[in-house]
Length: 288
Image (cartoon, rainbow, N blue to C red):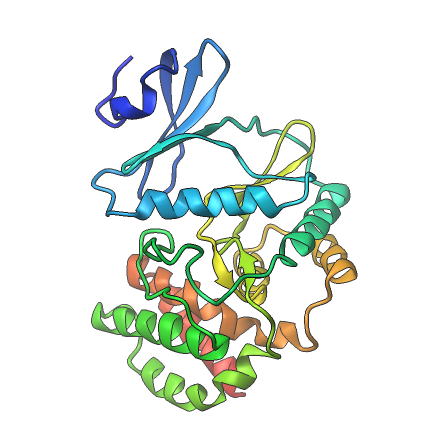
């Protein structure tokens, strides 16, 4: 079997009989690999920048090490600079209260994992978040990290691309002095998924939750909670079960617009559409 999108170093020795294209996101080509030992998942990124796949692998391995057994993270079978092969997750399980509660409990346990600093998991790796590369070098102050390493640079990119109303710069200037308040009570660095929208959570045929496509780093757990609320797809039973195991600091829902600014600004820069307006609206809500 050969494919222009599947480097030989990803498939050699795996006895691949067939590669079937499947959905892989906006930057990757993805395949179900049929092998003599069962299906596998392969993802490739054409012209992947140096360190991008290594950073994803580090995130998967960290999540896999620290997630409870109830919360699956796919095993890395093989990877290279341009792609990755993972165990195949057979989706199709029914989502209901039980799966939502199990996810909430599992995520709460995962978020108890503490790190040595805010930022990249491995200081020897670049700090990729999806297909963007912010400054994720180790830092000791979360509130400033969030403002200066994530929100402000992403706003600059969106403004330079003409994807957001220039009023956003004035709004952030008003909010910046409140960065510490808006970030909430200080917490130790926590292992976060980093891109936890509904599409990066699967439920398999046995009803087990799985986390995929992480952009993991040492951060603040409200990053994951806010992302889960941004596009929907997670039930209130999930958040209730989470709170019962690992209660977020008081007022966390009021801080959600601040924590949603990084993904909104990143989407505004990359896709335009209504994301810029949504980011402006989030900032306005924080000033009300």
